[in-house]
Length: 405
Image (cartoon, rainbow, N blue to C red):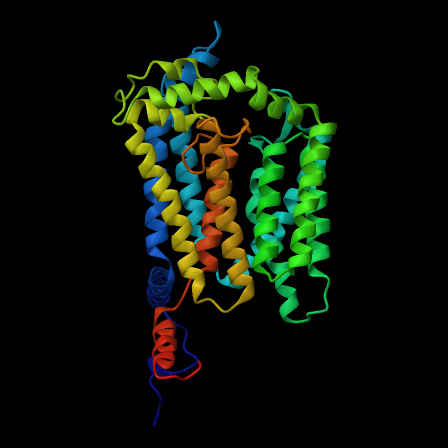
């Protein structure tokens, strides 16, 4: 009996059916992504970005008027409009990165770290100098390699430290020390003392989590203090900022002004665009945006933002508690430490409790490189912590009846 052409296994599939199959596949991929992603963490990040848009809108007039010249007058919402564009690009980058599998996210982090370390080598040679620091490369757009190195460093360091699972004899701590040392030297050539401290904090956090011995932990602590002392003695920029913080100076005046601005709005704030002290703040839309939030939206709003940062950190830690893969634990903890540490430093500077560092408030402050790099880091974090809820439910059910999965 003859076979009808439409039932032949070799018959070509009509274009319409191919398109429909492709659409079903894409819908299936999105459904899997939505099921596996940490939706609570994603929601917290989106709320933080919404606060950031409102904060930059409040701070934009101060910075726009300060940077306007006789030749060029910037609109009061100049930085707000730019910030929204960066946020849209960053959100697309975050969602795209979050759809990666864990292995793909690790590869992206490794390649990103290698590329940005090479870029750091170029910064002292061809980088642009702004306010006495050479941190940016002009590649058609201004790029700050150290910002994109942050998420890549957390992933690479987690990858190196996780080698111990395969071979406990590998000198993973020594390799991580060399990596950290190279990055510290490259950053201090700019100089970028604040980022060096943040990278060092992430490194110290991950070697602690990797199971370093108490002896090595103490040695690492003394090495950190020695490096801090050497930095104070050898780098004028670091010595100036620390001396200004301890004994007064121009940098201290800026921090003092930021604290006065923060407290000027009281508990509920003076109202949107009604703040007056923010007009005297340098870098109101970046370094000192937390103070602008305090003046215009009040200390209660500042407390809410701090709670959101804490909620993000706690959510990540809760996500990692049941995780058994060492790389996932270290990479997730490293990305969270980098994110939370940067927020912690920025807020302390605004509270006059830490020397001025020129560091943005994550997902709140204006900044192209900063916004894109932080969104990429969150995307990698979402990708690394993805879980299949059905597998997790089955694993917990087995544990309930005393069976090891």
